[in-house]
Image 1 (cartoon, helix red, strand yellow):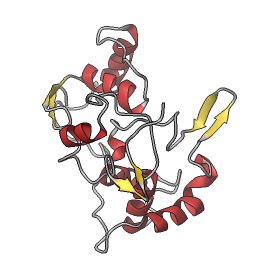
Image 2 (cartoon, one colour):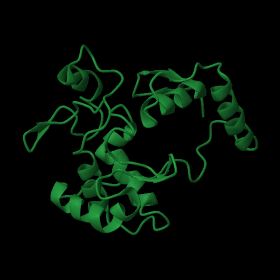
Image 3 (cartoon, rainbow, N blue to C red):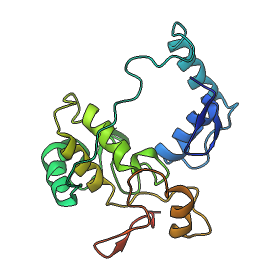
Length: 202
């Protein structure tokens, strides 16, 4: 499916660009490996091998996940906190800290210094809700209602993550205007319970 235009950065992206974005945003990895690095090359070769019998330019079943419509009455952080406590905390921890086995995470943190950063797609309620609805809790995808998926997505997004690497001049507001104005439902740059969301964790 690549090269392909991507709204997030308003350009045609190569597959290497997308992999670099995973390192930089979803994995909060700072400067990503170069496009011609051994890491990006190995991941690209593996992905292309997996797709070697797939038709070019055709959306295959199972790619991505269907959108989940927002609740008619809106989302609720309070309801999301309850869903998180009941359905998510057993794996991801009561404070979203994840779980470690030795020095490595076996269940990822969902907020805090070791989570993905504010540039990751999961900062959008609509993206997070769709992922949650179809994949979570682990092994029980589809067990949450659309409202529960949106509520817990909102709850996750009411916490702090590492700062968006694209931060403009130290300003959350300038960064919000440039990158979030038309970027789905999110709390970046908004004040929730007296706290400016998007300041980032260092």
